[in-house]
Image (cartoon, rainbow, N blue to C red; front, side, top):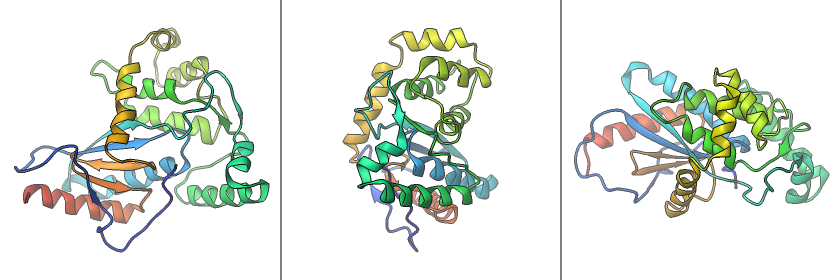
Length: 246
């Protein structure tokens, strides 16, 4: 499920994960792994809000962000699409409920400068997109993962593109300077399949059942699309804790 907007007054909502224990002072950037999906509205909103928090930190704190794979709709058939509005109507109990939810999340997205065009959005399997996101983290990647993530989210939510289609994905990567034939060859291979599957399993092992979820230094978990001020406050506090481990 998608993690809805929550804006608590303090950082008590931050939970402990057990990916690794920290007994020594950790040096280097604050490492943030974000489990999300490219068809998740709150993930798009959360991305913008989190980026706002990082920008507000300025030079006070170095943050290293990596997006990890999560599938909100793993049963979506590869190679097939259908209008998302119909999916929402089935999921949420009819046209009126679907319209209310779409209007609500679209309004919140607009506050972050994002235009949702949910009447055009197409249900699609996101495994190929996640493989490309994994590939963008490789040392020889010509594009950044953050840029690719933004383009994939915009393609789905604003442009009504089929992000499960290899040709569409190749076009998206071409916008960022990657040759279409190179992207298509990668998608036709098995490269990245096991790694993406491992990221999805890791989410289950960490108890992640809603996205976005932000895992800090493999130790702390922040649920949902918090507002930028909350993200900033939590990051500062966790940076202090890593210098005083207990």
